[in-house]
Image: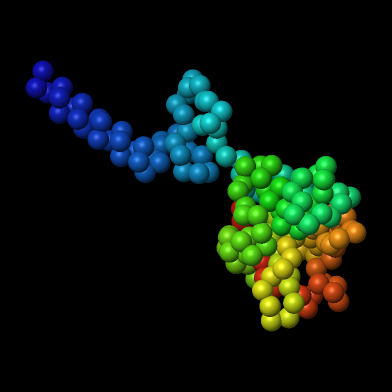
Length: 176
């Protein structure tokens, strides 16, 4: 029996170490969490997260599906309308990505992205010359973004490189 205790201790230490570092001989998920062993039942809360590119695609498609929804200051839902940051929060929130509510708060999250490196799903910010961002949209492709523009307008897609938007560009952030 004295041999079993140390062997059990070694196995316990190795198992704890593997779980703590996310190591798994059979591979792991993108999040670095070990994959369950064969035959294990995976609960919904333990399912691997979708790949970033798939998540970005679904967020952008959700935003695009809101085209035609009316602009409404403070709006955060399709039935009543959206303001710019409400549309962003809604599109990301539908896929369990928490994004703050206001343009100023949204400008503080994520990683800064150079305009030349924009990717689908990045947030683009606009504002007056020399001022802080006052408007936000979601990049659809390298040349366009979806947003809720202003009172009397509807959610729509516009080109980034127009005479109106180009001088107002204040930065971009990658949230996913």
